Amino acid sequence: MFCDFNIPYPVQGNGKITEDSLINLKKILNILQKFGYEAVAFNNTITGKIPNNASNPIQQIPIDTSDNKKDIKQYTRITIIISDASQNYALNSNNETINSYDILAVQPQNEKIFQMACSVLDIDIISLDFSSRLPFYLKLPMINLAIERGIHFEINYSASLRDVSARKHLISNAANLVRVTRGKNIIISSEAQKALEIRGPYDIINLASIFGLNQALAKNCLTRNCRSVILHSKTRKSIHKGVVSITTLDELEPEESWKAGDKDLDADVLHFDMDED
Image 1 (cartoon, one colour):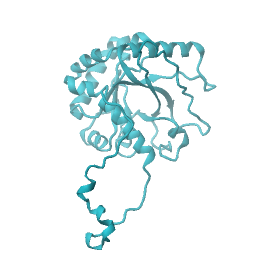
Image 2: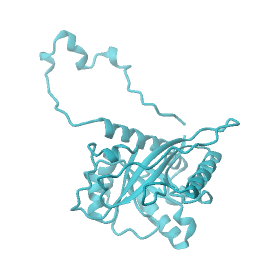
Image 3: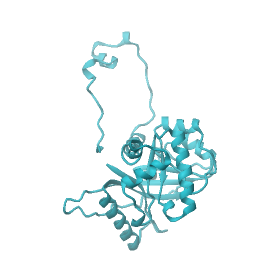
Image 4: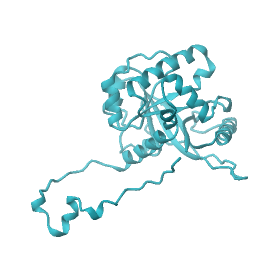
């Protein structure tokens, strides 16, 4: 299942989308469908603190599924551009606005925020502007901490199609990310503003080879890693802090023997409603 988890959703000041923007999004969906994508995330980007009265403006967009055309799963995403570490952005499970989106991403504007995103913030994606020079270095300890927490890093490619300088920065920055992460926990998205900026999955896999990714790891950036983002999001929104009690094996009652790991329970697994390739 190929995914593109960053299609900008252009919202006006009144929280609505214009008819022209809606037509443009339909064209983008149609080309994604033609290229074989099966999941997309419409992205609402907010700079700074989320307004108290903010709501999720993203609506499902009808798509033609006639003539055996595959439907496209549509997710909603919010990306928050953060520059001030002193602000309380309320990025937690108690924030109803954030919970109304399927995916939560942040775009750090400085090293301090990047460190917070890797180590503290309860998020799914760290998205960096690779079309220009990064204002900080990608340090291995912070990257590893984010990976251990199940956070994914995003590479967006469409800006490189518009500008030669952006293309050079993208290749350099993405190669650096691949080197530090060893190709783990990366997703590649388009951030396309129009249909002509969408590229097919195998074109992107070829592009990723320039970043230093082999074909298997590059394909993961469009498939498996995207599913991991959704799984992480579901877990983030469903698991809450609790109290853990510790009991020794000698204290267990006979009817509680399953807690010690009975072999009869080895086959029990937790299933999530997620498609495979």
